Amino acid sequence: MAKCYLGIDLGGTEVKIAVVNSRGKIVDEASISQTNGYSPETLVRRIIEKARALRGFESVCGTGVGVAGDIDQKKGVVRFSPNLNKWKNIKLRNLLRPYLKGPIVIDNDANAAALGAYFLDAKTKAKNIVCVTLGTGVGGGIILDGRIYRGATGTAGEIGHIHYDADGPKCNCGSRGCIEAYAGAPRIVEAGKKIKSAILRKMLAGNMGNLNPKILQEAASRGDPAARKLWKETGAKLGVIFADLVNLLNPEMIIISGGISRANKLLTGPIKSTVLRRAFKTPARACKIVVSKFTNKLGVVGAALLAQ
Amino acid sequence: MAKCYLGIDLGGTEVKIAVVNSRGKIVDEASISQTNGYSPETLVRRIIEKARALRGFESVCGTGVGVAGDIDQKKGVVRFSPNLNKWKNIKLRNLLRPYLKGPIVIDNDANAAALGAYFLDAKTKAKNIVCVTLGTGVGGGIILDGRIYRGATGTAGEIGHIHYDADGPKCNCGSRGCIEAYAGAPRIVEAGKKIKSAILRKMLAGNMGNLNPKILQEAASRGDPAARKLWKETGAKLGVIFADLVNLLNPEMIIISGGISRANKLLTGPIKSTVLRRAFKTPARACKIVVSKFTNKLGVVGAALLAQ
Image 1 (spheres, rainbow over the protein chains, first blue to last red):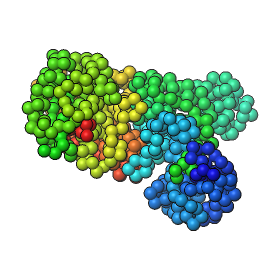
Image 2: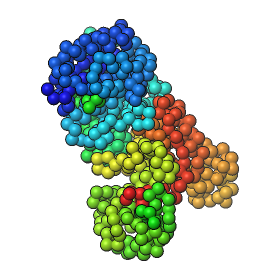
Image 3: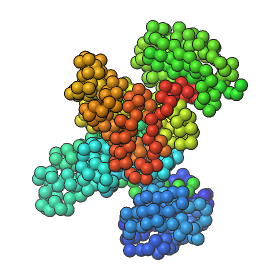
Image 4: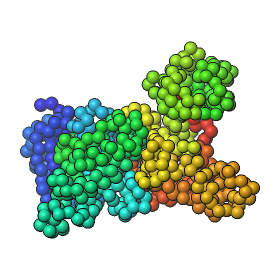
């Protein structure tokens, strides 16, 4: 079998594991749910058990791991991961080392996803791309000239913390008015709860506490004007940040992934029209803005390709 | 003599010409003032006359030109330059070709300045830098891994058109609330004219029409509280955009140049404190924010080094 890579996407509630070929195609995959109870050592052992059972594992010549949090890419250390039982300074590369052949690369999950989008969505044809992950937070990864751009201390790509309005609401990062403080899932739900909508009320049987982005999306799809307006406004705000990205980085593509990206045209419509209105014409027209067709695979495929 | 490069900084009111060595040191230099009356052909002939008289010209093995405006770097064409008698689609490389040995590179003046800052201010030690030029407009150039980052269509680095407030004042680019609409020299002067200040009034002998950024800077240096407040607010606004740059690009340095940068600590003070408050801690601490020590040379030195 041709060269393969092991990808590990270490999320807060699930670990995805896959053997991936050099073009980003998944050969075989598995997952572990409910990771939160495990110590790092136990989790690593469970991951290795699962990995060894995967087709193609014997051809693996390198491993990549994507982890949400603050990663020391050079040392292979998870400095801090808020989702993983508050992991602190875990030498993840050293823990994996005894079980695996070839290089082991640990990186931020947003960087891994961007690399996944570069292979799967951009098909390595667009060389400068930005991947924006819309979920609980707004994450980002930058690929320049076909490689992850990491910056001076490995923290580049924090798209969620570009300011939309310096006087805006408090953001988890400590600043105010970052786009995450408007377009993160909890903020969208919060805004949704203020909507007066008969359709939404009916869908939720009056219990607005159960509101989530998927329901807001469905309400909009059913034609609920208030829900449509909410997505339009969220898209317009994201569009201002996308215009910043277009003016600053002039990428060939911006690829949107993550749970919120399921809203699809409800978001991309206002995003695109805002970019065309606000960014410079030449780079705006040159930039394709798309929802990833591989949202659930970007992280694990990108992780594997980190090792390539 | 060692290898040298010819740099041409084609500004609206002045052309700077210099022979520069491979480390960015000026061997000899000259200038032409009042360029606006000349046709492109005449201006090129005058530039060549001046260049031939420079010490080290015989060792020139490549030429770079920085031009304000929309440049087709690949074709060596000035698509449009607002400052140069509205040059349109001028094949500048072809015009220079008969007179010069070696490669001829035409690029945006902000990119040239960024390359100049990389050699002169960063001394090629910081590999990822952003150069922000504060003048009539707010310009920018990005150096990543020691090379100019141009993006998909050569227009990357438009830092002046990152949005500070999407609902803010109209910007020349067609959008609203770009940082240039707050921190461009005309906007600073406009805000200055609204200041009630006895010191300023005295300095201008009552004629506020003569107000310019230099006078506003002097008033602040003399302790005028209103002028100090104006610089502080301008710096705080720029600081929000710098925090965006730090979060997104995680550069080792941001170097400020241009006429407005003479305000120095009046600006860098509030810029730095805003970045530390608003950007992620690790990249904020890792990023040196400085005023260029070579503002007047960045353009011509960077232009020369384009050809290296």
